[in-house]
Length: 431
View (tube, rainbow, N blue to C red):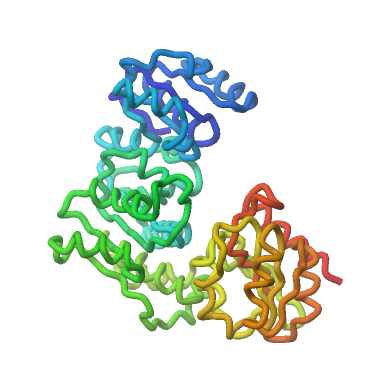
C-alpha cells in the first residue's frame, strides 16, 4: 500500500468505510496516524475494526478540532452532510483519498500522474492509457474511480505512471494534485443534485487544471460549451494545451473495442496523453489495436444468427447513450431505468439508426411516449428480460440489439454492473 511519514502522529477521521475508505484507513494507520473511522453499515465497521491502529467510533460524536483531515468517501454529499459542515466550521480540511495520495507523492519513487475526468468516457480512456503504457513497458497502475483504490496499491518503481480516473466528487475532495498530464473529455449535465446548478458542476471538473502547474500538459475535448470555455481559459499554456475537436474522422477499423464517435474522441485523448509522456508511435498503434475494452461499455456479449447483442449498461444518461446509437446502422434499442431527466434530446440525432425501441424500468412509460412517432416501432417492455426477448424476436441478421439505457439502474438493479450481467443472462437464456 502507499504510505507516507507525513501522516505519522496526525489525527484523521474517516467517514465511509467501503473500498476507498477502508484502504484509506489502512494506509493512514500503517503510516503511523491516529485514525477513527465510521460507517453506517455494521459490516463495514467490523472490517475496519480488524485493522491495527484504527478505532471505530461514531465520529459525529467526536470533537474534530485539530484533526489533520476529515477523509470522506466520494459518495458522501458535501452539500448536505452535517459532519462536513461541522468539520469546515472547525477549520478541518475535508478531503478524500486522492488528496492523501497527492500529499504522499514526495515520498514515492520519481513518477508521473495522468488525471482523467469528464462526464462520459473516463473509464475507457483511463483503461486505454494504462493499457498503452503497459504495452510500451512503462511501469503503470490505474486507480481513482476505477479498479483498486490508489492507496491500496503498491508504489510504482522509478519512472512509473499513475493513471487516475477522477470523478467530480473526487476532485471536490482534492486540493493539490498536480498532474503531469490532465485530461478533460467532456461536461454534460449529471449529478446536479450534488451541485448548485450546472456551472458549479463544470467548475468542479475545472479544478483538475487549477491544481496543475502551467508547464504540465492539459488535454481538453472541446465538443461542449463548458469544456471549450475551460480550454479558452488555459490558452496561455500554448504548446502545453491540446484541444480535441469533435467529429474528427479516424480509421477505427483496426481497433475492435473502440468503435463509435465517442470512442474516437476517447482514443484521441489517450493518444495525446501518452504522446505527452513520450510513448513511441508504434507502441501507441499496438495498444489501440490490442485494447479489449471494459465490461458493460459497448461490450459484445453474443452474436446469434447474425444478430449482435451489445451491453452498454454503463451509459447512464442520454449523452453517453447517443454515441452508442451512432456506432451502428440498424439498432434495436433497449432504453430506460431510473431517469436523470425528462428528455432524450441528446440521442435524437441518431434516431434514424433505430429499427425499434424497447423501454424498461421507471422511465418506460415516459420514454415510450417520447419515442412514439420518432422511431419506426416502440414497445413498452417493462423489464430487461422481456425487452431482450422481444428485441431478439424482431431482429434480423446484421442488426444490433443494444442495451444503452440512458438511465441509472437503481430502480430495478443494484448498479449498472448487475444490469449488464442481467442482460448477458437474458441473451444466454434465449431459445
